[in-house]
Length: 138
Length: 138
Length: 138
Length: 138
Image 1 (cartoon, rainbow over the protein chains, first blue to last red):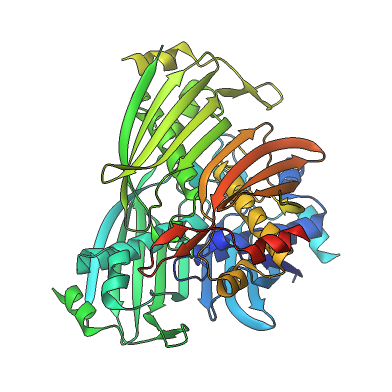
Image 2 (image 1 turned 90 degrees about the horizontal axis):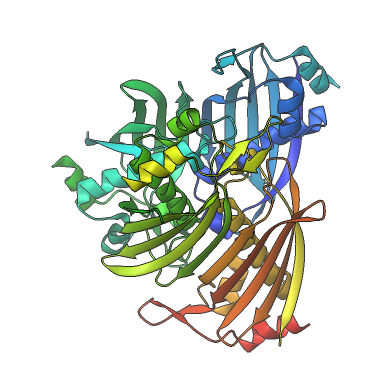
């Protein structure tokens, strides 16, 4: 089983927060999407833009996500996001844990599929290329 | 058991979509949050702003959400969002079904809690007021 | 001179607002971008997605914008956005006026260019096609 | 005249970009808003949340902004944002320059006002407190 993990910091901004003064929860999914991209960037050494050019695929859209919001965060908070990926054949699962000063605030899991464009430009699922999996094994 | 449902239309915009040409999935949660607000607005006859003034509470933040993405949508799509709420004591569950031309694209469930501010301004859970539940029973 | 105007309603949502309880101003630009797209949709009878397929161009990115924020708006406000377009050769200007109950809240002007992709896929400016201009003259 | 400047890095994310593959321009204003907040944070040593508590004000909403978009940026770009503030009595102006690898991509100017809440909770303009100005002079 191929797994790989990554930790990064993120700043919760004023504009991420709602009139209750806490983060508007869709912003967490923006943070998690960027964390997933960073996992691939750190493993492959390529930004997502460079990956799309090099690997001839179209992205890795979500098929499912699930999140628990344990403690709110707010503007000025510098949170830590730990992300761990586990690969299947044509899909992968990611677990994100977002914490503030060591206290867990949000847990999220994602299932995503690797997609390519067929001759008509339609998105369809495809096996994660071996050259990608290899990078995550290093 | 108190339930109530609501249907609305939403337009997927260019700026909601990502370089794959399909909706960036955190935007779905913005749509669902607005649908939840509209449920309360249609039941109470008050906008969320008016509710906050009239009902002395601070919002209904999420404690959990879960979504399945079945078919992508893209800019120019006019989707239909059906939302159904079921109340517990200090929390409620909402099911959203987002479809395009009768085909289900996303299913999402949310659990939210009713919160008030205590004397120190801290958010804490509280029972959903009877005057709110009554509106949903009509 | 080819001009065309359009009026639409937009709802300011909870998630568009910041901890001061008023709209977070970048959300206005999302509203204006959607209003510009709607101008083209109403003139051509095609959504932006359909236009991109039919007209072989890549969009109309901004080169300049300018906005005055006169009165704040907040969640629950149903605002009116009037937009007026005036065409140049390879560019066009749009004036947006956003008002609430007849009171002007924001004024914004945009200059955008019509772009196509060259053989290498690079975005470059091009004249607005005559078949597009014709639609706006009707 | 009190001026102060600040430079920071920002990453353009996949979710910041639109179907043309370049940044959706309202995202630039989110970046600039965070840069403005960072100016105040670096000068005062307090996050915006801490400032709101310590300084008894309600924020610094925009009254005007103006931007020129010179070159597009896209996901994976690590841009540099230089911001310079100049204070008036109850307002201040900020100039942002966003560049990629030394090439200017966007120029933006903002005028903002310092606001407090009156006894009825209504936002109104007020002089920037001397204790704030002092921090920027250091």
